[in-house]
Amino acid sequence: MKKSIQLTLIASAFLLSCSRDSSPTSGGTPLGGNDPPAPTAYTDPQIVEMVQKDALKYFWDFAESNSKLARERYHTDNPGLDATIVSTGGSGFGLMTLLVGIKNGYVPRAEAVARISTALNFLQNADRFHGAWSHWISGTSGDVIPFSTMDNGGDLVETAFLVQGLICVREYFKNSTDTTEIGLSQKADQLWKEVEWNWYTQGQNVLYWHWSPNYNFEMNHKLQGFDETLITYILAAASPTFAIQKSVYQQGWARNGGIKNSSSQYGIPVVVNHNGANGNVGPMFWSHYSFLGLDPRGLSDEYVNYGDVTANHAKIMYQYSIANPKGWNGYSAKNWGLTASYSRNSDGTTGYAAHQPNNDLGVISPTAAISNFPYTPTESMNYLRFLYNENYSKLIGVAGPYDAYSLHYNWVTPRYLAIDQGPINPMIENQKSAFLWNLFMNAPDIRSGLIKLGFHSTQHGF
Image (tube, rainbow, N blue to C red):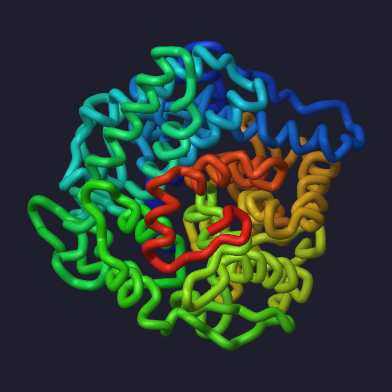
């Protein structure tokens, strides 16, 4: 899928470097910090708080300076690189991360509200294509930045990741007594209702990823399960203004039941057909991006139980790292997790890869195991101890765990991606309190959309 290959198109741009500079660029009150602590054994609650505060910095200290949305990337070895490129999907994750920051008292509420207001006003005026935003947006002008020649218009999946965050913003502030916060909730609601989800079907029973004013639907990328795009169908069905019918979900995403898979790995059922994985599992982000707001626990449609899909995905990934069939040095029960991230090229340079069992390059991506917290709390905590108590000075930087590393090659990239830092706070908080899951799943339009598609939730009573 696209997210599995997206940055390979621009990998050459990542090879630039210059002197280290980690000063905040977004203005306002910085969280700051991150000098390596004295060697110690932090308690589990201390580590969890540290990683949440660290990952928040990406969306606070290093936000795009004008829009206050998420930069596509931040390189400590070249901080000026692509400083004005906004990640649409990463910004949705960032909005959810800021809500966690407000809830936990990590950021001043009034300042966070002001930032989110700036961000939503920017989104209202940015380029849109039948209501959908582009993959990348210029933080300076709001104009589309083409991701590729034909990908210069609406990106429905990135838009879905953003809207998932907007729904949570709407729900969090909707009962406020503060007029600014009420206005923020109303603006989020307006933006969500303007997305023309049904336009992206071309009148067929499937959603398409892209539409371009120059190339129409020429990219011809259908959204079919299983990968990271489930949330797109949920939102499209839930839309009060531009909804799809159940048949689009059944024939498109679920492939009329073809989404089911009876294979197992390490004695654990795979449950669904992971696209391109042939009875195995794909990169871990497939069980993260759609589920920052969408609660998979006890969530089932007529085909599969998504609680089993996501938990089993995480457990298989954990067991794979222990089995370590390729014999990489360093893989273990405390050092595990494969997903799409920066990667080490065969010549030692930095590139990008969708790491998974059938594409294992010896590179661990911290977001994989950390964002699995709701699925594998014990195993994910073991991994966090490995990072913060054993390898802090090597693997933790100005905005939390670096994006990728390989103990086998003694290699680490001092870089960050919005789509990797973004799931960390929401998923940890969901494991702690179901915070974002409750916001999203209790939204009346979301609940109606899920019921319309034939979903049942034992956690949320429908």
